[in-house]
Length: 203
Image 1 (cartoon, rainbow, N blue to C red):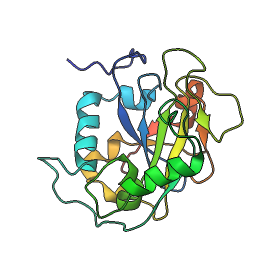
Image 2 (tube, one colour; image 1 turned 45 degrees about the vertical axis):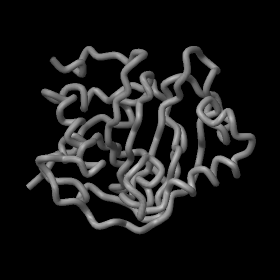
Image 3 (cartoon, rainbow, N blue to C red; image 1 turned 180 degrees about the vertical axis):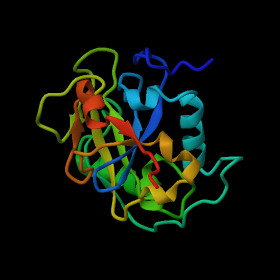
Image 4 (cartoon, one colour; image 1 turned 30 degrees about the horizontal axis):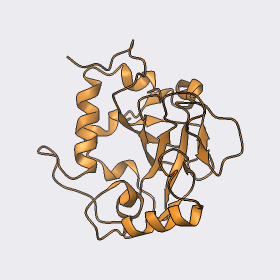
């Protein structure tokens, strides 16, 4: 039985990756890192977890159902904000940027760091940790809390919904207000305001 339903709440131990589209049609991969909320528009979908599995398998080119993948974007990955907790062993942003560059070439096998360069996705991560303040997005000066999403990686060539099979489009949450090229941090408490609906095909 799926854990994702309208009554689901974030909890330690389970990480979900969902997909979002901004007002310009750009696509972001949203990793909840246990504490980030998912939009009700996603949770209300019957078998939402299976649909997210299908989207993730397609992203990693591991789908047994949808095996026609978009052309490699051959772009670049740009580091934006990053986790103070995950990268606590590195002292400067340049060191983190170098680490990302080593892993982000579009010719490498797919991994988080080359999703922007290879697929054209923005990557947002939720602030993690076991208590408030243990993790925060380095490079952002405003207040944040566990579960808030921050922009980790940025593409130079953008994906669109056309890069997904039409059968999966309804699994992508849509914002009429956000611009992924401008919005660096998303307040977890406003996730349903940012993403009030999922994509619908209109005739």
